[in-house]
Length: 236
Ligand SMILES: [Zn+2]
Image 1 (cartoon, rainbow, N blue to C red):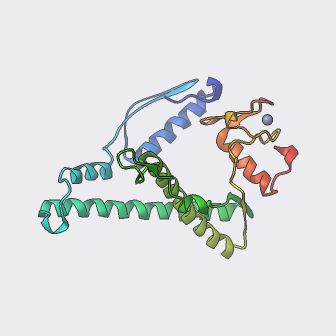
Image 2: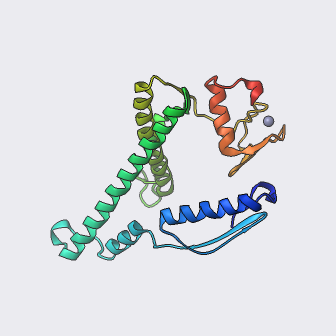
Image 3: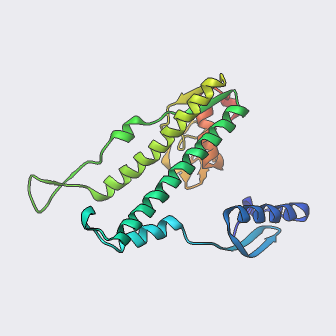
């Protein structure tokens, strides 16, 4: 189910027809079967049927073989390993393709592009080890923090690949890339400058002192543009 902002009744007449068409198009593109679709004036109900994630399935099948040394694996086990590896390569190719297309679109449409500077510190940081209670003086890896740090660094690695591609295309098209300090871009109010984690609640941004409200991603983008000097502060 999806609702327009403030549940305004905007989905009528031609808008409703066009929305139905677009949803059908997107579903066909993704290979989803639409079981039910209802476009109502203030909400959309959509129920789709689709194949389970193929990579997830292949990973589960591989896990069933347990941990075995490479030379002791059966033919079926080796097949399962190959299948997962092949799918990982496909996902990587698709990501790269998407990065190229997105970067090309940006470079075509804009003369100046501001972005958050890549956080190199995040990419090399490891989580703090915690003392092991069983063995005084020894340290056990901090599982949760390790994982969070790893996820963060994977995200940053993807961002880095994208920025590299964007930089190449920007240079050959004589476009300007402006990196800005990424700190607190999603916590700063573009209206009054107040910086507070309380300003943000998921997708919603609402400034505690001045009550400025917007989508959190739009606020982040405004702050990046402001820092890059692409927008005058009183326009925000
Ligand atoms: Zn504010």
